[in-house]
Length: 207
Image 1 (cartoon, rainbow, N blue to C red):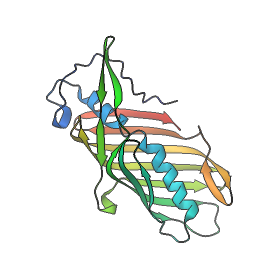
Image 2: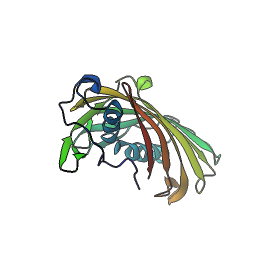
Image 3: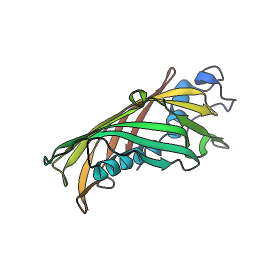
Image 4: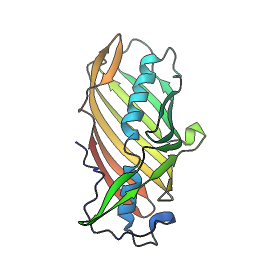
């Protein structure tokens, strides 16, 4: 269940979006929510690519793990993972985006009107300036994990702004076979905030 549903049930004026989302009559918290919602599909993608890198790693540095946005662009996970015999390991990963978009999504303006929003995302080209995904795995392969995703994404399209995520996550691990480790579907809880300009959106979802 995703509480960050793409259908916004509020009385919001339908006006042209502007930089920083503050001078066009759109509530800044609503603008922050829209900035996050276009990014929402990248969260499970980032986690999956992180686990793919962990499972395929032959050294601390993982090979770049890449996926396409549903509409345009790409998402790439790089970084390091722990090696060795311990059943407790960590991942220190970076999220890179180039022209990433999952495509348009619909926002309800009022009972009679909807608006389609289309956003594209990018991050810095410098790895250490990209959003940081840190995961701690305990009691591999059937234990638990915790993690954080923090950092800033540039937004363009119907909104021109930055959105900064500060997310915490917990979930269960499973033996994915062949010595690989995966997430138990439906067990990952993600909470935190998405901030854009003066706006704040509380994120709460389960994957």
